[in-house]
Length: 287
Image (cartoon, rainbow, N blue to C red; front, side, top):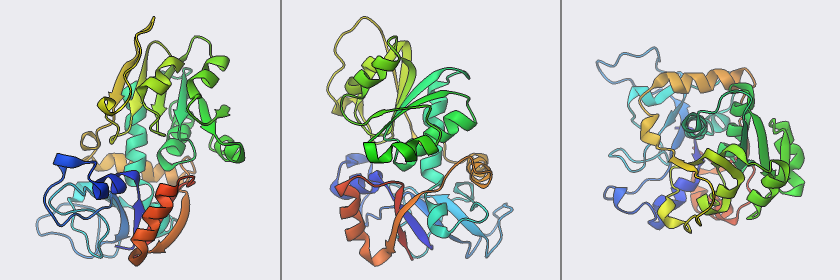
């Protein structure tokens, strides 16, 4: 291990929000890893070799625990080469965030030319959604930003930038009165807060730790909206997905944004920084 990106899921593991899906102690956070192949299990068929720089997805709720460790053993399908030219810290921000962003878009299945709205645009998943929606899917993107982040969000490819906050839906409707075709709610505003921005028959993609039961109910309205939840297990085990992310990063289609790096011994401080909010990209622990 050389680097572990710090994600919101790490916080939910730590504070107990993941509840019964977590196996017994020790509880080791960390969903994203980057480092160097140290050993390959006997009988494993892979094109990776000892010494290769790699990135990987870890599952803190599984038997091996998460990425906040010096050595990490994973199924070979969860490991792929790191993007050429990236640092370990940069590579660690891509695997899980990238898989979630891609799955969120796939769940909406919007044809090219349609319009998507994205919350949490300055964060890792939201930023990747914007870039994938433009480069790979040919969508028109409406994204949110605080005033100081408008230039950043436009640089990621957003066609229209609206103010960030709880009035996201109202801002979108001023631009698209009939509503957008889909929303990826990377800021965790919740279905009730974004549903009004979606047209009849459109969809909302929620991130893995978002549970509709934890949000205010959607008030009855004149149209129906489909709610989908990204499930990480649906995108694990397919190495080709990770390789696709690597190729997109190498082609400049995805920007690997590291907000800051700190030694792994300062994990507590990093969690405080994450919870304080306003992080652009990902905080990373280095080993």
